[in-house]
Amino acid sequence: MDNKTLATELILLGFSNNLTTNICLFFIFFSIYLFSVVGNCLIICVIILNRSLHAPMYFFLLNLSFIDLCYSSSAIPKLLIDLLSTRRTISVIGCLIQFKVVLLIGACECQLLAVMAYDRYIAICRPLHYRILMRWSVCCYLAAFVWIFSFINIIIPSLVLPISVCYPNLINHFMCEVLSVLRLSCDDTSLQELVIFTVGFIAIVLPFILIIASYICIISTVLKIRSAGRSKAFSTCTSHISVVATYFGTAMVTYLTPPSVESLNQDKYVSIFYVIISPMLNPLIYSLSNREVKKALTKLI
Image (tube, rainbow, N blue to C red; front, side, top):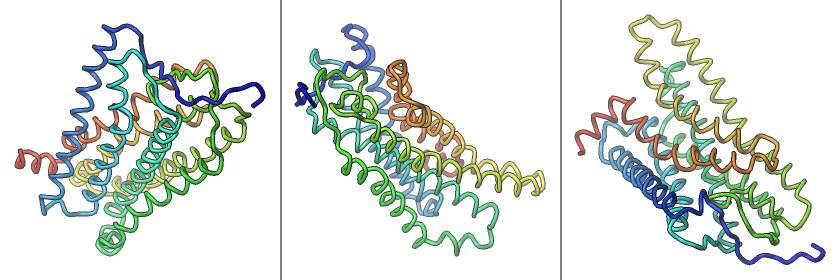
C-alpha cells in the first residue's frame, strides 16, 4: 500500500449522469421493486393462510419468495435514492456489508433452487416414499441447511480475506458488487479472485449440477408414464425450470468468467437480471404456472 490512501467512502457511477434518464430509470426500477415486494408478499401470505398449500413444495416456494424479497431490498432502495441524487456515495463499511449480504442471499437462492429440484425428483421418481423422505422435519433441516451452508461458504472466506479499498474510489456499478469493489483494492487481489471463483463454483455450479441430475431422472421417469399423466408431471416443473434458467445463467456469466476491464459494463447490466428482474419474475412465473397458487391468489384477492 505504498503511497496509497485508504478510501473512507465510495462513489457509485450508476447508469447515467443525465437527470432525465435517471428520472425515467427511477420510475422503471420503482415499479419493478413495488411489483416484486407485492408479488412476493402475496405468495408468502397465500401459502401461510391457505391450508391446501401446506406442502413441502410450497414451503420451499415460501422460502424462495422470502429470499427474493431480501434480494431486491438489498440493492434497489439504495439505487432509487442514487438515481435522484447528485452525489452517489456509500461508506466503505456500508459497501462491504451490502456486497456480503447480496452474495449470501444469492448463494441461498442457488442452494434453495437445488433443494426444490430434489423435492420434485422425490415427488415424481419416488412418489410412494415422498411423505417419508420429505416429511416436515426434513424440510426444516433442508431450509436451515440452505442458510447455514451459504453463510459458511460466503461470509467466512470474506472475513478471513478482508479487502482494503484505495483511491480512486469510483465503482462502475449501481451497487457494491464484489468484483467491482475488488478492482479498487490497495493490494494484490489474485488470492481473493481465486477464492471468489472457488466460492462461486461451490455456490453456483454444484447446485446447478444437482438440478441437472434431478431433471435427467425426472425426464426419464416421466417418459415412462402414459401420455395422460405426462403433462401434469411436467407442469409441476416448468416454473422451477424457468427460474433456474434465468437465475443461474446470469450468475454464471458474472462470477465464473475471468474478470477484465471490458467486463465492467457487462457485469453491471447482467446484475440487473439476477438482482432486480429475477425477484420480480419469480412470483409471476409461479402464480401463472401453478394452478393451485393461481386459485389461492384469486381467492385471497
